[in-house]
Image (cartoon, rainbow over all chains, first blue to last red; front, top):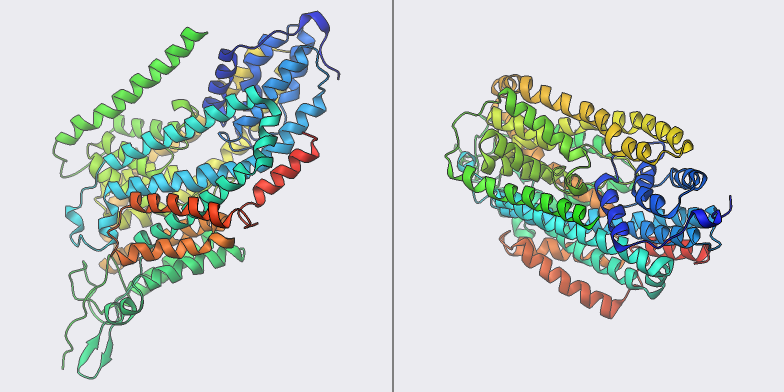
Length: 320
Length: 303
């Protein structure tokens, strides 16, 4: 299929056409998400205002619709640069430039995979967890995790945590999406290549990994917890394994070990669901009161089970 | 065209403004002692889960309502206790902190866990750790809904193929934004509405029947399960020269006796990111592998 049929197509796109296309894409990028073509249906939907403006003969419209109704999948916000570039290519093609279907398809299929990887690392992998952690912290969970609030019944939480997250996350994601989409159009394909070659994206990804790792470490320390409840009898006193031994070496040692173990298991190809079931079983067995009545809260004397919920506890004084 | 744009933006701002002002009025009221779910509230909760999966809200559903933190807040608003709802949502969100949906596959459904989990937890009077453990199996059930969605919506694509053959621009567009949503609405609204309307008493009965050690076990599991979400995210960024920063983040928090704010961590992280890129550069091949392959792809296409 070669380019246009002369006088029936062509024309100049307005800024508003590109923005209209972006709005369709940002709203409906996953509306018809499916295993067969993933975002293919959404891609052609986002192109409809462009196709309508550029092509007037039914054959050209038909060809353009079919051209974009193929398998497509990328991260929708960073990946918007692909749409911008493709819009620029369609405009040139409609105005007589020698751009065939293969050129457009190769830009789409060549960039969608790599940009999905980069985009997911930045949006889902870095921005979202950081802002979620911020929101969860404001919501009031960090005080629970720190064991500072023994009475769970009085715990209320703070809705601001959710609101702060909604505002910051939407602003960040929409801003990225808008800039990538419009810049992709104005600077064309060379924009993508220039960014990749200049190493700017390399630096952003590396910087994001530094930030992401620091934040993940902080999250692990705040929210992952395991407390040993069973005491060791040494002479006339009970030695608290958690506070007297483990916390003296490195506070949060068990949590760190658990995160690294999970990471290692996942890397070895374990299914996260299997790990999840195992952890629940371990937690239940660890909480079974082998040695006495089960404690209700942190303030209760512990020592009846192997693991302790909510925070470190103090073992009862030895009986005899 | 421009006027229509302004209308879009204006409408979004009005909705956003309303969302921002509603909680202030609800917050002032005292939380009811016992929460029950009536028919209307169950409808709203089902609708909320649909919006989390659907395209409305500027496509931000996936980044906001889909997250248990936000779902918990909105369920709390609907049921009259936004503070408790946010707390429970935040707890459920812990195991999905590292949630990444890539290439159309998802490891559990944070949204179902958030919407149904918070509803059942509020109605059942559960604490945050019990809610977390309860939400885990619900989140796994959500993958069933996801698979139905991803399989069934392919029919819409075949309809689009036929309409593209006719050159029917309007129908192709409508198939994407409207017809796909009829299916998605039924798929998401119905199960959540049923669970919210009929499931709560059932869960309350179960929780009341459980011995204390099982509840304690669920709470212990709550602390452990957060490790899975974090480790899943680590698979993507815990590699190469940036690994030490993970241990630094962990140590900063335990050294401050878990009192350091995540904002402080974020600022420290930005400073370190700048210094790392400036002095070490991007020699670490691990984290930059995606960029490299993108460059190669671009070069292959002769761009």
